[in-house]
Image 1 (tube, helix red, strand yellow):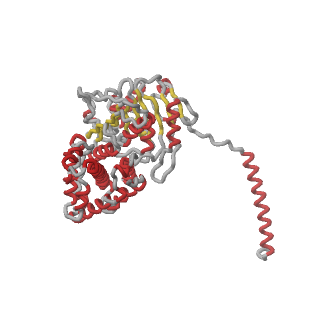
Image 2 (cartoon, rainbow, N blue to C red):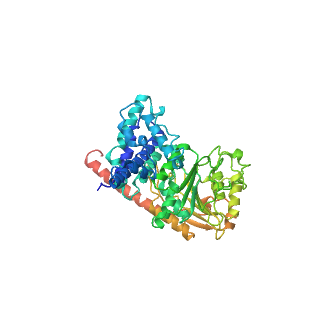
Image 3 (cartoon, rainbow, N blue to C red):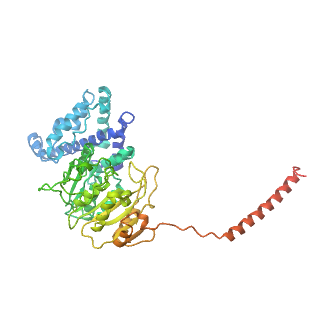
Length: 504
């Protein structure tokens, strides 16, 4: 019986593999190499594990075994196997061999992996001149050959060790990558909160139109599994503009066992790819997203002629694309069951001009459900506090709930976090939908209209703490007492100094 791997040991081993590149290659670059190698190692180990099982079952019948292996989740050509690459690690040409292996894997699994490896080249000059590159990749192959990273299913058991390790790596890279991190990663506790707010159910379609590495989508899927004894009766859809991040999302999905997904590569605003059979925008039960904050050059030049009519409520400012993503998300919600949660900077709550017009129309159409203020420094790449807006079709009333959760967090040096208790309080308040002093306020439509449709949270949730009243007479009495005590001390000090001969 093989010894089961421990999650913390796998995490430590894959993070340790990054030492090969540190000091030589920037983390924003080498993350793609490490994550891709983890994917290659995993599918190689699964292939090898199943090959060994079939040999035990069928004996020495290579043709029969090869036929059975054609039904595997991923088909692995012999030349593309990690262990084939490892055996030749001391030879020149490691980069070229790894690239050829990835292309062979893509060809053998074209329906699942088309274009996934096109933005990653192990033979790139980014890794240095030929000798240095070959040395780096030899070390990387040796790192992944260690016993701790023997990822065969019989050593993993039923736990999602590989998917968790991949997520762990992505989180570590996000912490190291500064501003760039927001492009591919949403902090897990924020994803958890958003999944709880939209409460996805069995049989539903879930979409993230700016999906990054896919972690937010998978949190929604995971919630359905937890609520329904492991059920995977749901479908995940996403779109990502950055090619290398899209590839991460695809690999992330497969490593978590999320085969029922459709992740498209392209610009969601300029070129939405999630369309139905009539070439119209596909609609979803649940829509979640953490779009880029106040994106410049978001595609305003083509917005007026948008063939999907997404900007009929108004065209967002050319230098701030927040409402472009919000309007896209509104447009793809299903008419009856649709609900969405989106992370946005606080400016969307109160900025005027075209954003004010759009905001007013969304409220008048009774789409806005809840506004939640989050603490500062939660997100990678920005220290500013953000808000979560929950919108839904088919609302029961015209009220809007405001929650100020900005003061409750676990403080960290570089990043703050939401604890389970903080998330639970937000979700409970959201579900109960009632006012709580200094934390939440249920505002009527007339109240919001009276504020000119300004949604700035302090207008609705008063968190002001009055200073305690100062008793000036008591302060004066205390001051007189201190003066008397000081005078007595002065007399005593003079006595000591006289005894010592310093004063006459």
